[in-house]
Image: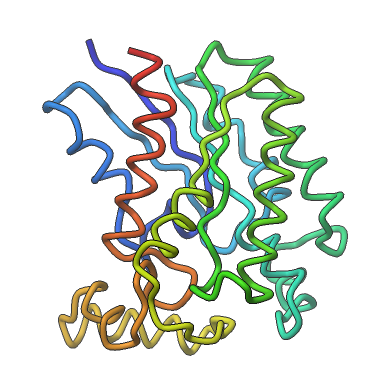
Length: 239
């Protein structure tokens, strides 16, 4: 029997700048056992995800994962280009913690009302790799809000942030300061990857980063932790 899993999210799920966790998730099982479907859009906030649920509920899967909140958390940091993001993503309001929590709650409410799927909300990956830095603290705060939404709506909470924090504490990588990713920096990663044929893991190593290529997008190690958390928290229970 095949388990159909819809993975909802932003660029981490779109996997143009990140290692593809959907592929890693599928490879954790025998061929045909898990069939992931990708619903990721670069740069999305929770509000944007709420606007595009029709594609998911029209053909409901068996399992739904939601990995959203990285961009909402980034918008709370000094130096993030909020106005440009609002224009690019057509946000009707300025991103805030309260609005994020409301939008995510509305996402879950609709998925519960219009599907019979098992639903899991992932906490976001750690931003940066300095656990005492403002970026990591922002991603931790948004993880707390996601846990609240999961509890309130009686869906699974998948502790990705906590799992990555554990990994960083164990490995104790260099405390490289968080840098906000600019469009030029993102294009630079694509050029290194597509033109110079450098793997995303090579780009990570050259920058001294353990889980990401740029403090946000995931390398193989970071993406493997996403697949692990989904597998342990949802698929094992679903089976």
